[in-house]
Length: 438
Ligand SMILES: C[S@@+](CC[C@H](N)C(=O)[O-])C[C@H]1O[C@@H](n2cnc3c(N)ncnc32)[C@H](O)[C@@H]1O
Image (cartoon, rainbow, N blue to C red):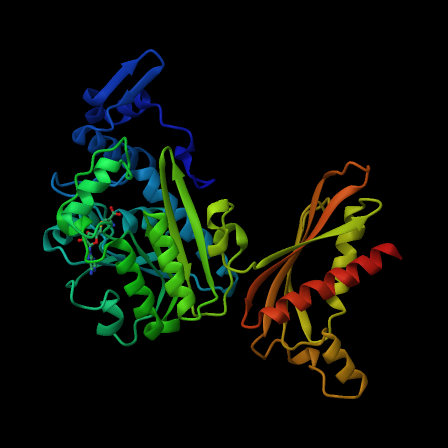
């Protein structure tokens, strides 16, 4: 589960029922404490309502013939999106617009997201009139009609229909929990093989759960459509329920030559879900958000945006190391440190640097020696930077030999040219290592 997800620790059901008495009749006691019957439809609904009520102040009305969204799983996706959006916060765009594709009767994603993020607003699409009218009631019940707008579409229309209807529409992200299955038979086969949520009951209607070709085909359609919409949306994302779909969707992303993408994994009890993100912008997300450790999936991972270089440090003088890094960055011609956060004891520090032009590669330095034009450092502010990166020291425990384990971490934040970023990271770590050994 996401590290900020409070449901990493299962809720105390008896305490929860005290706050939300409608849950009381669903509580079952056993020798180890209290729980609910997760296979019981009513119990599941009361639990979702209770968690949303207690933890987010959301009042939800869930119709019996539509999906009941499990809160911990839906929250995982919203927290991951928060991580993605926060990576570009330094750009200073305060308000964030998201598109929820297939919002369902609950409108769970827009509601949770808006409660957690006061600056977010949503366009929420669906093809199901009944779900959309329930979603609208839930949005109004929670006083969020000014921030969440529902959008009715059809299965034949482009999935990203709002971008076609309004040519001026720009969004920060899209999100989607797609219909999983390709047919009724697929639903039954999956229930038999217990592939999905073995402990939970599924109350979804066909329109919510079934789409031609299943989730993989739905999300690959999104990938294809996104090529035309391009940078009008900063981050395209979707959840996926099958590992095979993940392989196919990453194949489609790579097939379009999209290098800027990421994968995450949501694990909740026995259930595993994945989410993908891709972008046509030159903004980059950190490896903690875009890569996962699952060994089965390493061949699908994107290239690294976070480079860690082990640096030999004979004496772990943190203040000196921070000064050395600061001086190495100040010495890069044509670059400017725009932000430096250094704690009082120097145990944590983070520098953000803008570079307008490559002045550090061997070729650039050779050109400089020959009298070629170098970037004018005063022009950095005015020009669009070719590279934005952050640098920080990571201080570890003492190593086996007694010396300290110290790493210089370089995080790619923005830029088109991977070689430029990697060259910059290795230039700084070389300069820093030289300074340390003097
Ligand atoms: C698995 S449900 C997700 C509902 C809700 N977002 C949630 O996570 O609980 C999939 C939703 O997508 C909707 N849907 C199916 N095809 C769609 C399309 N082409 N465009 C928009 N929504 C669609 C369904 O009606 C359904 O509400």
